[in-house]
Length: 117
Image (cartoon, rainbow, N blue to C red):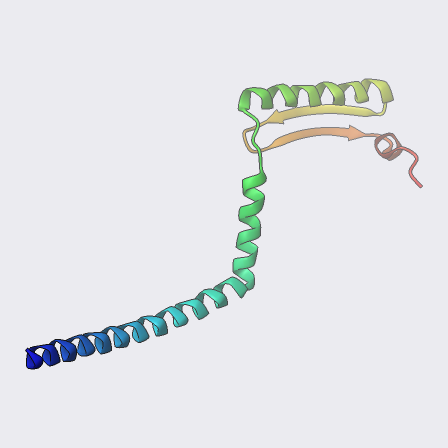
């Protein structure tokens, strides 16, 4: 019995030593990975990526049907400026999914910018 108890104790001690060795190897890997993560987090490019991600998450999109309505409101307000100020001639109002363009002629920049000083 004593010999069996000694063998069991030696087996448990050997198993504990093996587990400690494995734990030490894993701790080393974790430490290495943590230092790599820290380098990535401190990288300027990654910081910019995170900022872009934050901006994109805050961005809201209007449904296309409402977008058209808003564009038409803008066109009407521009037309009212044109008719009210007399020196603006608008032409070629183009609406695309990615671009809004308006061509025209302004005869006097004061009409466009007012009397700013």
